[in-house]
Length: 147
Image: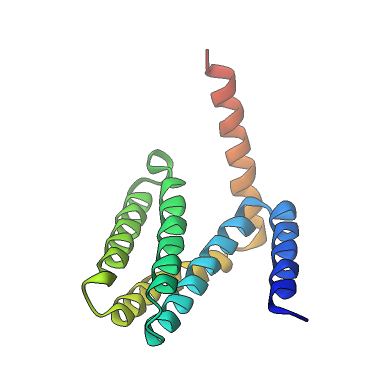
């Protein structure tokens, strides 16, 4: 099977996973994607592939921005604020890759983000269902009170 055919097959499988995923699973997929892109970027650095490094770091940064922008500071309080600060720090570190040792920076970001992804993956099913139900209720209340 050619590389092009394998890539097309993988993209089709990913689209199917996204279409059937709940919000928790989508977030987990984004988190894994960020870790994968950082690993690819490290490989690009080792091969002196500047374009590949840049592409993968840009994709990782976009994922972190997306995850950061989904935080609800009003509901999450100090925890959400701390996560916001951590995402901003990781984004800032990734932008330093052009001027400093890229692999060390990526390793630092992976060491910070890996436990977050692991904790997200370990959330019990009942807690996910309760959070989703609570989110639905809040959306309904906001819809009813909006002009």
